[in-house]
Amino acid sequence: MNPRVAKVKPQANYTLHLVFKNGEEKIFDLKPYLEIGVFKSLKNEVLFASAHVEYETVVWQNNIDIDPDTLYLEGSPIKIQA
Image 1 (tube, rainbow, N blue to C red):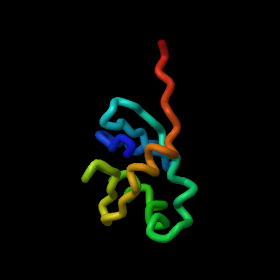
Image 2: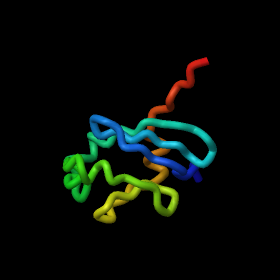
Image 3: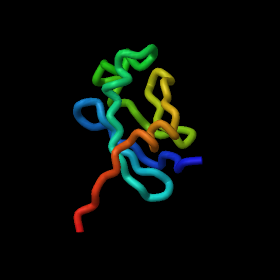
Image 4: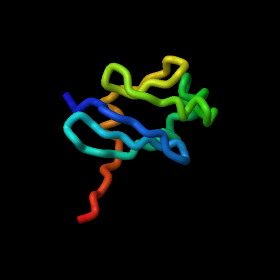
């Protein structure tokens, strides 16, 4: 099982800044999903910006959620500046 989501911050261009329970941070690009089923409604920027954490994953106002394993496995690690 992969780490679960602790924090989410919606970003410009339909990306999510994620902090996982193990401390890792990643950027998840939602754009490839915006033409698929229920995710189409997230093209509405106000709705997209309603992203928050529930049940250790990302959920939007209209009860759309996304698998936390997908977020972790497909997210791009954020490189920390030393």
